[in-house]
Image (cartoon, rainbow, N blue to C red; front, side):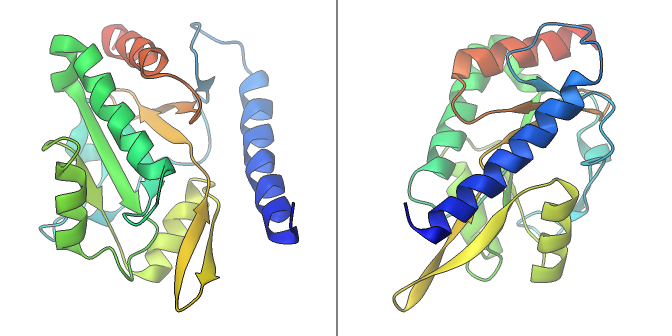
Length: 199
């Protein structure tokens, strides 16, 4: 394993260890497949643009559960897998799927222009919304959510290393869960259904 891969692994493991430590400090109210972060002091809100240029915050989605993922459209595997799973989660929820809003936040505003984001998210589900900001706001938002990402040169271009966690808000807009990338669509759906029916 090269030095870059080791650093990335340590950074991502560090984020997961921190989340698990925080979750372990409180008594869980319900059994979730994901990490219960109810009461967390991060990820409380965001202020990002949608592809039409409207400012979006959590208040826009009150009454819905929100599933939020950070990535980039040229991601070769993790991001398309996350969004394909989100589409499957919406299907598994049946009628409750109408009360789920999926948000995809780009970590690559340099290349992920609004029209690119809109086409990318729509390829998975027309209701999914891509969100973006300028580079400083993107970095600030990622830091607020404890998202790891790093630009990695590849020949004449670059790719991004990034963490692969999904953040879940309940219908009242409170951050409740962090879901791991290796979890199944069914496990995601089970956790979301609990939040939707406990609201």
